[in-house]
Image (cartoon, rainbow over all chains, first blue to last red):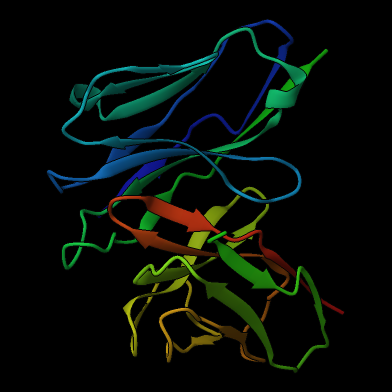
Amino acid sequence: AQKVTQAQTEISVVEKEDVTLDCVYETRDTTYYLFWYKQPPSGELVFLIRRNSFDEQNEISGRYSWNFQKSTSSFNFTITASQVVDSAVYFCALSEAPHRGSTLGRLYFGRGTQLTVWP
Amino acid sequence: DGGITQSPKYLFRKEGQNVTLSCEQNLNHDAMYWYRQDPGQGLRLIYYSQIVNDFQKGDIAEGYSVSREKKESFPLTVTSAQKNPTAFYLCASSIAKVGYTFGSGTRLTVV
């Protein structure tokens, strides 16, 4: 069965600190996708990244970076020089391989990490 | 612009009443999903549909029902059998080459 674990329930940092959000996943599929979403207080889910299981390259986007390691089934997210606007709940998620060619399976979410950045 | 529209944004229900949450997409996505979010619980799957006229139960389907008569629409009915329906409900759709698109959610409160 698929499972996503975000062990950190809440993290508090002071502005300009770096912070890493951990994500560990379980799956028997060889093909899958991993995602990170940001959920601000308004509630909508903001897409941050999708990673294919065959692509283990780390990715950097501005202050955000992701470290994907299949050997440890982890997909960690680092925010460099955090800002108050980064305060939100962050979700890691895993999806099954595409079904019927063009449709994705269901998403499995972790419980989320509440990040608070203090000025 | 293409996207997913959930309505209403806020919904109040009296105990014992059924209510229906609307989810419409104009992205031409085949798959659609309903998730429920409670504080500290993350998002849990209620139902999903990968093709018109077909849907599957998720992890917490009891007390809910859905229909998928049109590709664009996937309404969720919260029945009186759902004992604790107060929650935030998110609808999503997907296609493999793009990923998932989420609506802005409906906050349901039982009064």
